[in-house]
Image (cartoon, rainbow, N blue to C red):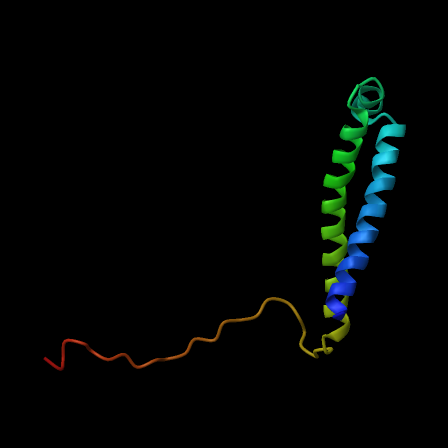
Length: 102
């Protein structure tokens, strides 16, 4: 299996685990009265599942982006430039007159 696929799967599992902890905390702390709303609903399991899956998608994406950024930073050679914004250098380009040949 390619390394990037393993990295993506690990990021997805980590993201969904963090999302599970996040959903549990939101419901336990009754943020925006969601804990009470879910506990008194007849479709509580579906509400919690949707809340967990949607947060899992977001957290997995963030985890994967963070992991890719960390790999890119590790592979990037240390440049000796001073950093900061790059300055554009004007270049003179000769232009042809299209009407001249007629």
